[in-house]
Length: 437
Image 1 (cartoon, rainbow, N blue to C red):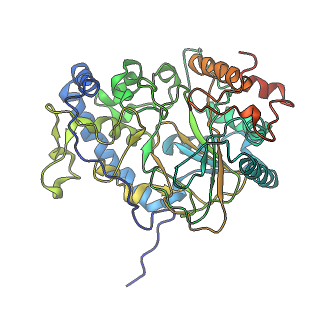
Image 2 (image 1 turned 45 degrees about the vertical axis):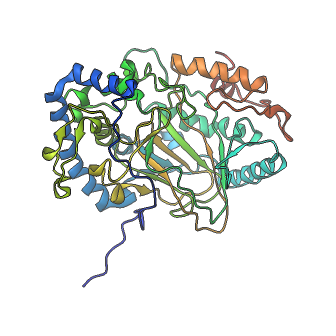
Image 3 (image 1 turned 180 degrees about the horizontal axis):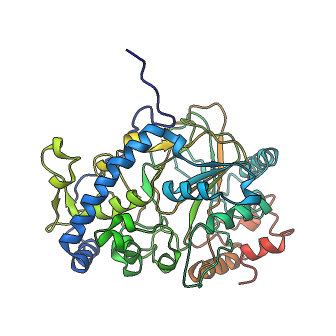
């Protein structure tokens, strides 16, 4: 009997991530109001039609992901910075919702930046805050010289623009001009287990259903036509209140793609990121899931027609209005997360990983390597009215020594040892950082 072939990037075993069962939210007005609003606007017939269709889509999509493994994730070379994405690459990115672009920062430069940021953290360890508390490695550091050197790098600004250009806006009210959103740094030591970032989707949770300006983004899905959902329409996305419920995980800024820039090598089971490489059907399934209850017989779970419309009660599995949207095998079975949540291919210092704002992702619970695994979080953010307002405020904050309002930090980074400010920025970088807003 032939040996079983290991699927590239597939989890060896499922981590002890939390499972999300049915939790009645009927007593919580925000949840009940959100559910009622969707049902009143679209009705049972359309929602059920969408549910059946998307589950049928997923049956084919998940088999394709399982067959290809993480080779389904597009990988582009540094030449992309000069020539842009080919039509084939663009089609793959828009299907999967993710891409790796290698060599955005030259490898030796990235390694040098890692050495410097590692020292910077060490020199200021008594002042910088970090989490998780028992084994800190996610640093609340936003305005360091190293982060700003990478953000303002000519190559990073180029790829930032290319990522924004994958979106479209017929209103003409936005541009792909990059804006810098400050985020933190990760420097994870080996042998450190962490369960806190299981499968999830950022950019809000309950707000997707509760906010009318956000709910309209998924109009095709709720209308019974999930295959028509355009996950790249910035025209309707730019006004979505993803921070409708104010909480630290909910950014005020629209990030067209979230991003990692690697400062050290990273691979599966060494603190790597995992992605669900499909955007249209996966987000459609997630937003429809609260309107259907599973069959009592587990043998019928994968048969969408056996699920019943949830016309009473109010369950939003994995949805906490103050957290990101979480998913699990039991709460979202048709995604087949066990087989389809993939480690990205091996990445090297200077490589970048990008994933759509609505894409399900997770972080390795393990780090079986021998060296620290470090990344700088630098997303892509287009020039929208909301983003401009935030970036203008963000710049005023950091110039005054305050940490960005999205993160509610209290450290005056201008007082940190080795702080340099923004001298030496190019005009393009100054524009991206908000100097001319």
